[in-house]
Image (cartoon, rainbow, N blue to C red; front, side, top):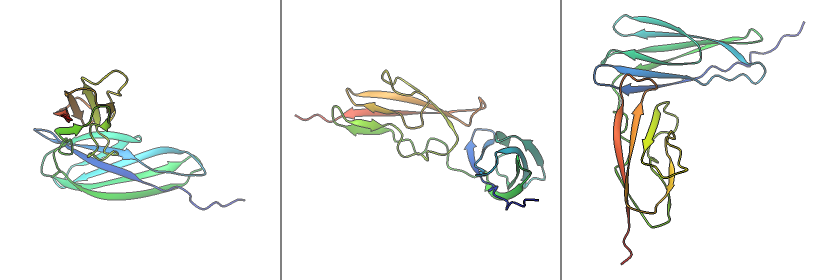
Length: 178
């Protein structure tokens, strides 16, 4: 008989996306087990208004009422039968998505610039950019471009579903060397 220490380390991230009528929680599993793959995820979301929500699977986008707080719990199981769990509290009072997007970037001709460098790269939201030069990644959180002209780019940010979105614009202005 071989007894193995539990190598399963539970982990997850919670991000809240503020929409006009509700808040969407973006739940992302970050559990790791260096010995055996994770095969099961059981989430419990307990809201301060008395609702309890059960979910399974690694990642979720969940709409909740504005003004509530609560606890998210995750129990994970690895293929070798190890179990582990953790819990985190959250509040639906959040900074509006898109607040980290800078509206104007000044650059020199030929500069390589990121259009959204002030935003948390792990937030779990979806980004769709329009007007980017050919070759730039229109779904990147922080697409990188070469500044060749004054231009305005638009980004649509959503919590990962079509419930709502925030639209922001980023204007790139080239310095005039004269």
